[in-house]
Length: 227
Image (cartoon, rainbow, N blue to C red; front, side, top):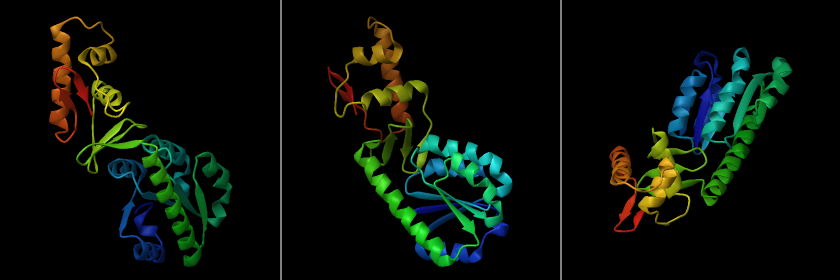
């Protein structure tokens, strides 16, 4: 489980940080939203996102939360705010903040909430895997069917529209073999009638496998392709 703490490093509560370090081995402190989004894309599983005392950035929170939910729709987010800023409570709720904790907060209360949220996130991730939203498509290669993103270990691999469409097709039905004709019709919406179109398909798959060598696209001789 990773903790991503977004806030001004010069104003973070040292006792809060120490409490988190006692419970979690991976804690990343980030200064701003764009930096967080970039980092989050690399390791978006098993994360707790904590927005710490970001009242002066309140207008940017909906944008940030929306970007995070585009990557992982069920991500839980905690906001920690000063008690005198409770006027922003409804604003945060509208921004889909899941938990709002008010400062000052005791260490015991804070850790109880973090533990409860951790259990919720782990449960959600298990259910997500059961629902096959994230599937293995090669050694250390994961495909997120919901967000159309592919990762090698923790690194997101950028794909073209055609590459995304190809992987989406091949992962729609487990172990199904798609013929050249089917793939060409689905990828280019053209009738299957030329050797050039077969070459385009072959080149597309070749480029994709060069980009992700561990991707398990298999050519079934005289039949077609499958993952």
